[in-house]
Image (cartoon, rainbow, N blue to C red; front, side):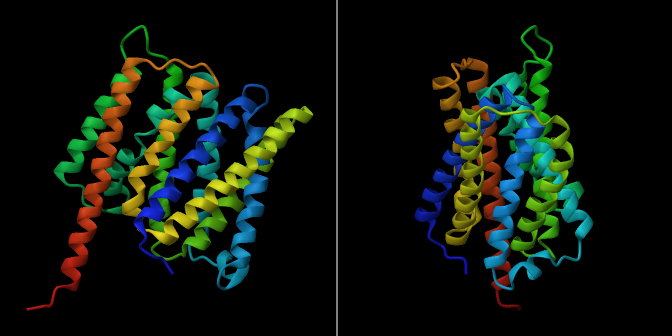
Length: 300
């Protein structure tokens, strides 16, 4: 049963973003030496085992988690997320953590923009204005039309678009399927895809890097466990703005561990994107509360 303990939920979300930032740093380290497909494949094997274990312990067990009326959409969601992770990790290799996360931070704005045509939701002028501000921030980061622009910057943008579509499809399947069902299909579908793709690029890994690989798997499962607990103890609208702290944590790792540079245009652009994203999340929360009040109001 979901509680409504906002302070605990916020604390768990901060911990979640920190663990996921560590995961991204390890992914960047390994992807600089080994093929991305192989790394994500091994990570997904562990993730799938974690998902199956969680589903087995949930109400109704594994059989209930597998049951879905929308298997094609669920499978596509899982495949899409696995592909998105591969794209994002490749972005870490070419761009580093700071710029990759700065561009990727626009995904909530893409969800808001696409929620109309994909889900039929109403997007008001305030949210469209916030999306426009976020788009300006993205242009400041990418700097198209200048000698500074790098085509590699389009990699995290593609990843953000894929993740936004994944988020919208998650909303879509939630109309009929439980969160446990969606979680199960996400892990298993992705693991099947990555097994077929990753084995082609298999290469020997040093003992030291196997330790890093084990830590990567643990941070992946640990981050998802913390995320599940976050949404168990608090409303999503209360904790979601704090998900942007992953940008802060990942950027700190990029500066301290990988000696990346923090350019002024990235700071300005990312600030605009985050501000627009938080405003969009707050507007969605306000609309949800207004709809709830309307539903509870006594009819005339």
